Amino acid sequence: MAAPIRHTLLFTFALAGLSLTAMPATAQPKHGIAMYGDPALPPDFAHLPHVNPDAPQGGRIVQGEVGSFDSLNPHILKGRTPWQLQYLAYESLMGRNWDEPFALYGVLAESVETDEARSWVEFTLRPEARFSDGSPVTVEDVLWSYETLGTIGHPRFHGTWARVESAEITGERAIRFTFSEPDRELPLILGLRPILQKAQWEGLDFAESGTSVIPIATAPYVIDRFEAGRYVYLKRNPDYWGNDLPFMRGQANLDEIRMEFFGDGTAMFEAFTSGLLNTMRETNANAWNTRYDFPAVQAGEIVKSEIPHQRPSGIAGFVMNTRNPLFEDWRVREAMIHAFNFEYVSQIINGGEDPRITSYFGNSVLGMRPGPAEGRVVEFLAPFADDLLPGTLEGYTLPGSDGSVANRANMRAATDLLTEAGWEADDAGVLRNGDGQPFRFTILLRQGSSEVLAISDIYTQALERLGMQVSVTQIDSAQYNERTMAYDFDMTYYLRGLSLSPGAEQRLYWGSEAAGTEGTRNWMGVQSPAIDALIERLVTSTEQQDFVAATRALDRVLTAGRYVVPFWFNDRARIAHARELRFPEKLPIYGDWIGFQPDVWWWEE
Image (cartoon, rainbow, N blue to C red):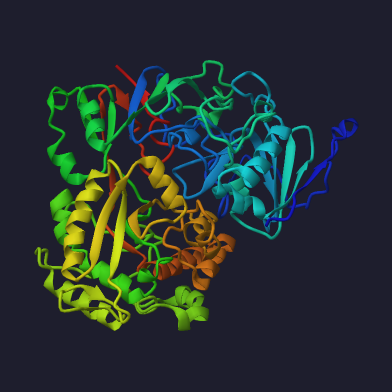
């Protein structure tokens, strides 16, 4: 349990012109902060580099989501919320420039201050910052937001708050957070926490989900109307406090953002072709080439845009829950990967166009390099050499096939690996261990996941040839969320996007503590001292060289861990949209990522 936070009120208005807390000489308030070095944009920047500063305002975007929702509070574990709500309906002290790996600039905060070791951070609020009801944003709101999120909010907030030793209001508009130990990333993570209105939640249970409380926040968009499970409409607040803020110039251009919900992907696509939706993000290359020829496309009313990116591939595929003894042995997991006929599946599902995921941070400078580990990567892995799985130091490559249905070479290799791990087929062809127990498990899928279901159908046929007894179960979104949050599954579809600036969130993805905490993203249940140490190293690195080496080492341990049967990734976004919807010619290094659509798009007749 985290140590209690000390909240110290140091108001001395008679001494308004004096510093209330002694500061190191090297600490100075700045307009922005970067993970390494200085932020790229100067204090007097006019706008972010990847926006159109002259974009007109007006129009609307209508987006679709598969699933449902029963809550408007995206900051707690309970309930289901529209996924974009946490980004569109809330603001933070600082905002991210998506054309830099990790750099923040003031939004609600006019300045940020920290020491060289980054053992503390202090934010000073803008005096003009306002909630949508016109009330000012105060340091009490900030303090309440951080403490509430860090204690009874979603578990993703808890780890960061546990690293805060004290929180002090140091002035009428200033608040300082001191850390239990120096952390280069923590000032940036804290700068991105959503700010809530304390008064709105007085007398209410913040941890209870529902739709009865319409959030009062500071963002340019407010909830206009909604119907639980069907739609949420956001409208641009004409009195938005930050209209003249350089950071916001060229952003929040659309008058209305609509989020419509559908039972499955087929219904959502039909809504797009019929004109109910005016944008569609396509993740299947084959569908992109074959399905988007309906009349609106032929008439030029719908255009197809491809947006490349330079970010890591992330990981997508079937994750094996190592909490299940079936998947404890790495040889079993390697056999599961051999049985997945990537070349054949990719050709059937997406025409073989999208590249294979080769590692978690592949497609970027942070990805592990082919062959044996070298230099600082070896140095960082050396303390754990005796416990590292084969391929970590020597180099690990996913097995390839000839693309035939039989996939004979890989199936033989899978059989050999299973035999080494103590699994052999009996006279009836059923794979059993030494105790006679069959190799039986279930692939759990969310209803509406038609593409993943098609992949699982091909995959299960191969697994059954090995003698495994595999069933596929589809459940609705509510049940699926409950079960995955409780890690109540054997195997399921797993998707984790990764950035060019991995940090504290890695603990939630694959840290040992997260493996035993419900609601985190460590679905595979990995508990590895090497992974924990490498996460700490990349978080605390002060040099770019060490940060890159630590991430490449982490990439090796994760990939050689064989926790996921990897699919493919989109090295570009494919978005079909109404011709009136436009985006800037200059693309950020993150491409179509959070903060791109609809943030910097606009409507132009």
